[in-house]
Amino acid sequence: MFFPCVDSDDPLKVLDEKGDFRRTEEIDISSGHLKAWYIDLCRRYRLPQSGNKTALRERLVKFSEAGKEKWKSSLLTPARISHKGVRSGSIVKRRKVTQLVHRMGPGASLSMSMPQGVPFPVKRSKDMRSQMKVDKLLPWAEKFMVQIAEEENRELELSHTHLQKQGASSINNHSPPPIDPFKNTAFAHHVASMVVEKLAARQNSSGDASPLPSTSCDTPCPSVDFDTTMLGLTAESAEAFSSDVDRPDSPTIMFEPTQTFVLPSPPLRTTSASPDRIQCSLSFANGETFVVRESDVPPTQPFCYNTDLPNLIRSWDDHGEDWDPPSNHPINVNGRPIPIIYWRDLYRFNRETGGEWKRLKDTWNNWRYFMEEYNASDTPEDFWTKFSKSGVRMSFSRIKTILLEERKLANKKMFEEAQRWYGNKFTNHFSYRRDQTVVPMTDIPSIVKLYKQKKGLGRSEDD
Image: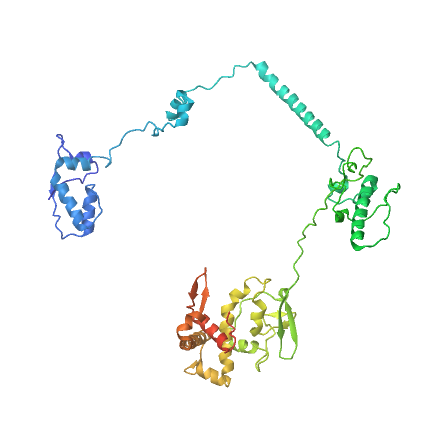
C-alpha cells in the first residue's frame, strides 16, 4: 500500500510547487505486524488510534486508497475540527413570552424577549444637582437623625409612664418580696365574703348551725401570708369582682403597689464535676476486698509479657502458687499491685481511661488463653513439654497461634453439636432482629457462646 512521506517537521515541505506530494512510499501493512506498529502508523498520518489490530489495519487501507485529497485534508489541517472563528458572545435562547408579560404590555414583552432584558442601551444618569445642594445634604441628614432619636425617646417615656421603674433587684434578676393583696380593703372584703358564702354552703349541706363570722367590719383585714391562688383569685383576677366592686388595680381605688411583679428566674445550671464512680470491687486471695474507683485506674503502658513469659506467670493471679509480682509491676492502684487477671475489670467500661480496654482487649485475651492452658496442665514441665520443639521452648507468638487453632476447632465441634441438638429449630434459637427482620447468626464463636449459656456450661470471659 502507498502512503505519503511525512518525515519532515514542516508539513508544507512535503508538497511541491503544484501542491502534490513530493514522494510516496510503499508500506507493507499485512497482518504480521504487532498492534503497536499499527498504532504508530495511524499516529503518523493523524488517524484515530482506537480499536483492535484488524480495525487499525482497515483504517490504514482506506486511508491509502482514498487518494491525495484525503491525505491533504488529514495531514495539512492543523486541527481535525475546523475552527469556527471568534465568538461574538454567549448564545442565549429566546425565552417564551408568558401570559403575564402579554398583560403587562408590549414594552414588557419586548424587554423579556431581549437577551439582556432591556430593549435599548441606557447610559448612566448624570447628577444634575449643584455642589451647594450636595453640600447641604449631610447637615440636613444629621439634623433629621437627631429629631428622629428625640421623637423615639419621647414616645418611649410616654409609653411607660404608668409603670414603675425597675430597681436594682429586678435588673439583677432577684425576685422582690411579694405584694400582699389584702392591703386593699375592697379586695380583702370581697375575698372574705366569698369565703363566707362557701362556708355557709358547706354548713347547710352538713347541717351545722354554728354562727358564721360577720364581714361588715369597717376595720381592714390583717395581712394574711398565704397564696391567694389557692382560692382561684389574685389581685389581677377580673372574675373575683362583681359589677359593684372595683378591681384593686383600678384607678378608682387607692391601691398603689410598692413593688412590681417579677417572676423568679430558674436557677442556672452549674457544670459541677460528676461524682467519682466505683469501677469494680476486687477480692484478693487474703480475703480482702478492694474497692477501685474510675479515677484510681492508671493508664496502660507498653507491656513486655510476650517476651517475658515467666513474669506473666508470676503476675497473673494472686490465687495461684506462682504469684510473685516484681517491684516494677506496671499497674498499681493506691500502691497495691493489681493481678493481670483483674485488668479486664479495671479498664472495661471505664470512662476515665477512654479507649484503653479497646487497645488492651486482644492482648489480654491472648494472655488469658496462655494462662488457662498453663494452669490446666498438671505441672509446668508438662506444659513446656507440649509447647517445645527439639528441646527448645516455643515463643509466645507460636504458642498463641497453636492455642487459637485449638480454640477454633473446639468452637467448630461445639457449633456442630448445637446444630445436631436443635435440628430444624436451630435458626429459631440462634438469630437476632434487625430492622424488623429476623437475621440468623453466622459467627461461630458467638453461636458457641450463646449455646454454652443455654446449656449452662459456664460463662465465657470473651466480650
